[in-house]
Image (cartoon, rainbow, N blue to C red; front, side):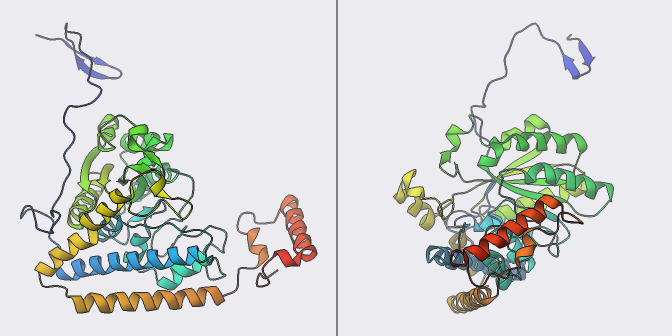
Length: 396
């Protein structure tokens, strides 16, 4: 009989055999999938999606794809300073959003505009932010694609990697204290799991039993750094167990699988008041951003293969077509309408004047301190002295 003892660190049973825990399991954690590459259900047991929701999901994925294409082209034309696409990861964006409630609070990274599309953020609102005009909710103080919306419970995107994770746990604990029928959802990439904030957040969430769902988009690359140079573990999903967080690995290119996994994760987070970690395996078809050329660190034929054979939109559409919920005419009309809306929104955003210069210094202090007053005066003096170096449309 082995003796069991309660240590302050936990109850244990003793053994006379010295045995180290293996650094990694011989078998990889399996990946939850509903649709195969041809859009055929692999089982009849999955979270059912109504026609209305399925069509909206597909329409939103198409909208996201078109928006990314046009904004990317606008940046290449010099009309935007920066842009970042979600190409190849549309299913994670839209399907996860569809599985949530509008009351759920979202703390995104920078590749989740699809969540806003699902919640009703308009093309004009996207364009205003990217062009930083006076209609931008951030008053032009953030770089493009750093969206935010109080109305849609969507925290403003922050550039530093993984800082949203501990913030999400804090927000989730607040939701818990208020006894709200909601949870907090936060997104990050595989690169974010290499940050200390990730590890602190999982531990913080587990100990405080916070209703937060962590969604990791594991696309294999942190800009140009492959996962093989980030960690030796079996991806992200196994890290949850180390911190006492229930976890699942899902096919991020399968919209139905993502929808089902997030729907279940949300229910557990709220009902059981616990954190859940979801690792969504996917592939970033586009470059990391407009400041990156991914062909420098991965083969172009690999990108093309994922773009064509494992396209999340194509797979989901095949399933929708088999249900008789969509045809070519419907999609053609959808694409045409989205393109027209976005091009019009861009034209309006470009014509809208920039925020006044004083907005650079407001919204932090009740009364502007002397050092900022001095900086504002220096900036105005510089513009007046060198007017040729500043856009004529900037209100001063």
